[in-house]
Length: 376
Ligand SMILES: O=c1[nH]cnc2cc3nc(NCc4cccs4)[nH]c3cc12
Image 1 (cartoon, rainbow, N blue to C red):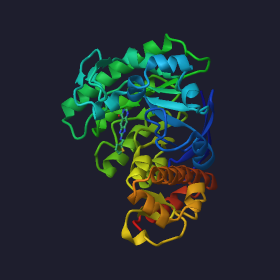
Image 2 (cartoon, protein in one colour):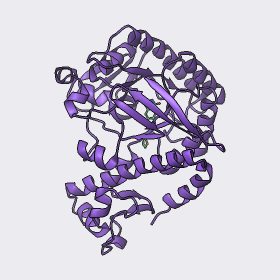
Image 3 (cartoon, rainbow, N blue to C red):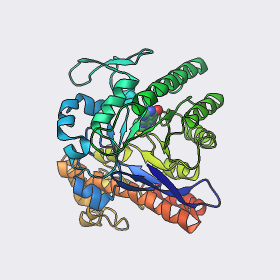
Image 4 (cartoon, rainbow, N blue to C red):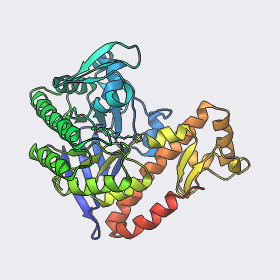
């Protein structure tokens, strides 16, 4: 997998690049819509390509392993063949989902045992096991098996957790480097930096991850409830150590403001459930600011959802109509709102990319953040 940096912003660490995979190119900075169970909820593949202009989507190992399961995915020839998405896919390694979904998990040196949130069946995820699972899913980018350290936590716990993640990373690399891709295209493995919000632990973890010299690196353990300022300080610290010629992926982030700030700090890749999750609750991100479409205020506002965004759903449907659909709990409401938010997120990172190329990203960021985060 090749990463080429094109433009860098003179006043920040922001940069644009192109990531080439066997399923095509990714222009960074990029936002990856989350397709948890093999689909981006309520959005068709054609819409993802034509309206959202998504370039890479994320799948979750935990969900796909439990349902449809490895046998179906293998018989299909991998996730790309199963869901018809022929562009790049990244899979999270399951650690975070077990931590956030299954309250019966037990963490041991060998791996994490848990009970399925679907049928209560018992399972274990080990570093080796999730490498094999991601080989079977066929993601272009596979994530190492880590423990997302909860926030807040004691220094001792953060260190023990980080050291476990490092031992698991070594096991992931051994397994990954000794197993072939299953479907004829290359896969790559990204390690994940942990260390909670402790400066020395983050430095240690970033150095350990950088030493592995993989084709890309991720920053984990953030967007777990820490204050934004803590997040930014941690990103700055870690990015100073991670190699600048490899893509940096900030997991689980975030709001438009978080994303622009992290781009300025040198982050290239993002994923977050926020655009799709908020959409289903009627919270829309638009080029004019944030709209809670269920609010009385939009009852007879027949203007397009987001004229300036220009996406299909955003210009064809009115605010009043979408409000009606959401209040009626019509499925079409979730579809339109999800399309709006995802189209907005991809528009935002594309705007950032243009501004970096134009050399005025740092100036543009401030004004844009103020406008986008205002509540209408
Ligand atoms: O350390 C991590 N390792 C592997 N996957 C992750 C996924 C993650 N997702 C979030 N936050 C996602 C959000 C949850 C609620 C709003 S945004 N933080 C995350 C941290 C990790």
